[in-house]
Length: 427
Image (cartoon, rainbow, N blue to C red; front, side, top):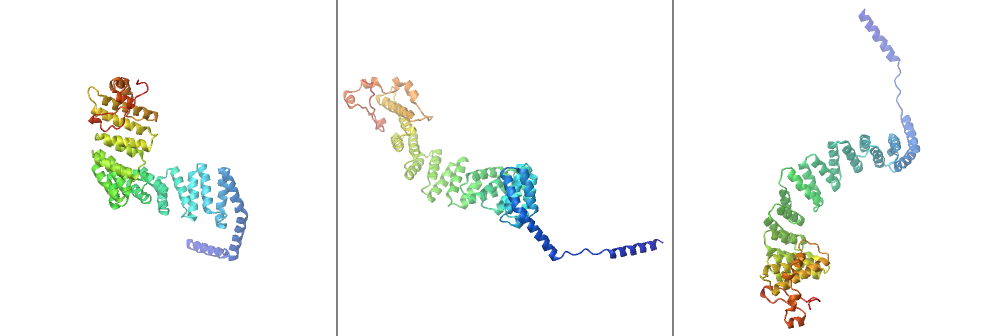
């Protein structure tokens, strides 16, 4: 009986299936009609929708902007006319509207949709990376920036952003690779150089290695040599820095930076003569730089060569007569010379030199000098004991009074060429 029922059921299903007509196939003309209808709808709707979207966007009506762009993408208006409805514009402004509403997940969805159509669009990928950032999706953000770095290898901003992401995630080796790429594009990028050193330290490697390797691999690159010398100085290796700087100067004898750094390094190891040579070479390159004249004067003071010290102090005044530091330098040379050669009790020559120093400190202050080295107050407080004044002038020989000036005569002060003139109240 069961077998009979099964046969009967099978026969019934067979009959029913034979009675259902097959689904008619859509012919080519029907597809063409559907396309024509869609094109007609697009021709009518897309221009209006694009205009409305632009208006809502300008008015910062983000909700309506989203509504309109949703319809635009549903109709694939960019496929209707990519000139009047450019896909980048559609998906970019659509996503921005969501961003303004704080819906970064929706912005992400829109941008991913857009990148299906235009996968090589850099602006959309940047916005997608931003959407990931706002959602805390760091790994996805990094992936997008890695894609951007491949798509736009010369974009330093993209590389910088990727470097920061690697740093944030403690991926220092990856950060070092990106920073190297930046420095190949821009060798003088100080931010990248600084970040590279930090990345090396963070990775447990000696940052000096990177600067040495960069310079050794390209000794013709002057900036690499200067960077390496700076690092050697910071590592308390001035002798090595001097060697590198001398090599740099051989490659570029006009490098003002190299000569200045060489002078500073030489002073660090008490090679003042070499520092003076470096400053003299620097002055030949730039004879209008008052700082060089002041540095030379200081260098000569440090070896008690007051003749050359006063010469370069006066040269600084010749270069810039309005510079208070130049006059203060003359005062400083006189003061140091006086302090070295003064007698006990003070001689007339001692008093003359002290007075010259005091006079120049006065002029320096009038010219706006506010430097740390200023002995004016001390000299004022001890004027009667230290400075040449009315009492000394009263006792001067007649021929000195007639000449209206007095000079030093001792061998210790042979370097003092300037005369001291009496003041009006010295009568």
